[in-house]
Length: 190
Image (cartoon, rainbow, N blue to C red):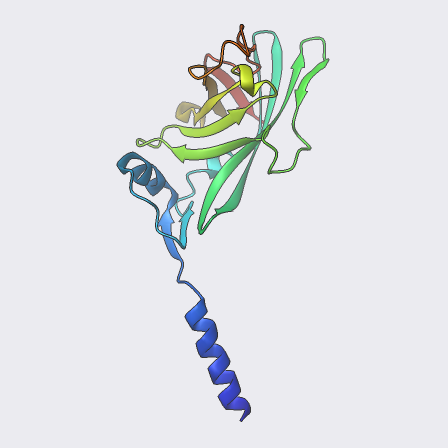
């Protein structure tokens, strides 16, 4: 009798479980570019370790500001799809040492934490979504990062391509000042 109950339980469990399809993370851009939906149950996994070179703490100076970026990798679930992605928390200080912005202790779900989106087709850049404190007036955009291969991946380039096309000028007559560099800056791995 116990064997029958266990067998029925296993059959029911297997019928309710969906099979998970694992695809390399770099396939995400193909789905995005072709407007084809990613099948439910898919896990876009960093099988080839393409994100690993970014993980760590990076420091640099740009426009009289000191930047520290802490890059981590997570698995994020959205609806019925899982995806490996990078998160970036940051500390920005003036050259005097005063703190201008600090997201280092924020939870993963906080909008101020820069969240990864996709690898470029040529896999040279990883693109992340950024939303600052003044998103309404244009403090947002895509952050592009890439490692400099001649330096043995000890350096990284980073820049922000701001979203400023859809700003309501009646709400924001002037654009917000960007706190992230809009021209490429070099960061050193710590």
